[in-house]
Amino acid sequence: MAGENNEELSLEGDNEAKGGGKKKLIIIIIVAAVLLLGGGAGAFFFFFSGDDSAEVVEQSEEQASNDESGEVQLASYVPMPRPFVFNVMDGKRDRLVQIKVQLLIRGSDKVNLAKKHIPLLEDTLVRVFSAASVEQLRSPLGKTELRAFSLKALNEVTTKYENKALIDSVLFTGFVLQ
Image (cartoon, rainbow, N blue to C red; front, side, top):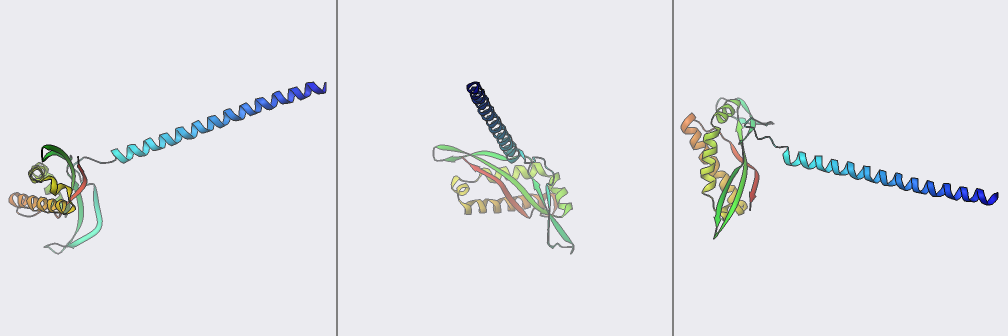
């Protein structure tokens, strides 16, 4: 009788060990699933969080220096609706370039005028970007020059149509050269 009790205890101990192993496996699977879902959600928000609309996405809380009328103007950022994608020749090889642009504009009246002329501004930027060389696109100094050329060209065009320069700065918010 004593031998029977020992066998029963060892069988119960084996079942508990197997049940504990199953519980650990289930916990590991749940933790792995939560980590995968969290990583997937993080990647989704990282890659798809950009807003491609032509609306002002942010108004800076920093205030700009006074304009001609003496009133303080807030800085606003106006994104171009889509990135600029074009090819540039590098010797015998084509390079693909993608540039995302936002315009820094001070004053709500200028923001509204700039939004009105988005197609004209896009056309101007396409002309400036397509004239760039691979060397210019590779170097930090070249990118700075490209921003300066872009700003000058945009303000020339807005001065032609609205009798005033609208853009304070051209910002490259995404830049890929392949």
